[in-house]
Image 1: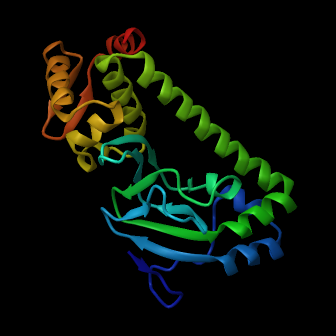
Image 2: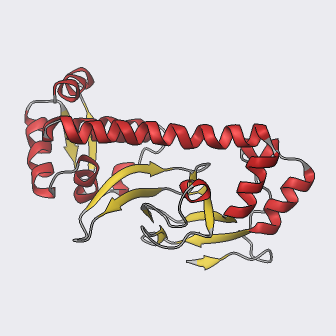
Length: 231
């Protein structure tokens, strides 16, 4: 992890995200004065569950995994964080700690923005606040769906859901599976690595997917959808 200074060649001076374009000149100056640009290298933690949160993160480029963990270091992957997304929004509205961890899958350039500045903008600029809260609610809906999957589905249904989710990411990021280990995939399904490997081989034998090195191609999406629904 390193701080990117204005004199560095990879410094990004403008915030081009649509939600920030809703701000007035004075409000943009507040954001500029409240942000620090950081480069997270692959494997660096962007956030750590339970750590004090004085800022939120806005991802400029790169991919990361958001996950939760327990006291025994078991982890469950919640989602892939993509460019243009906020990390740590809950700390603006609730407690002062991050309620999940996130780790860089690739190099990530990120703005750290003081959360007091974001809270001020939400109160002052209704349209900006609406967009931000909408994103927060969308994330909560996805988390509820993830919880439903964990509670009500068996291992094969969980893995099917994970593969369908990662396939949706793959449309924009074709190399996504090259960034993920089999453990990463297992942690999206909430199962052991050994179970994930066994189920993947079973799906390949049934011609639902094809495995090639780290890559996974879905050959029969309708059958995978059926496994997901009946899981």
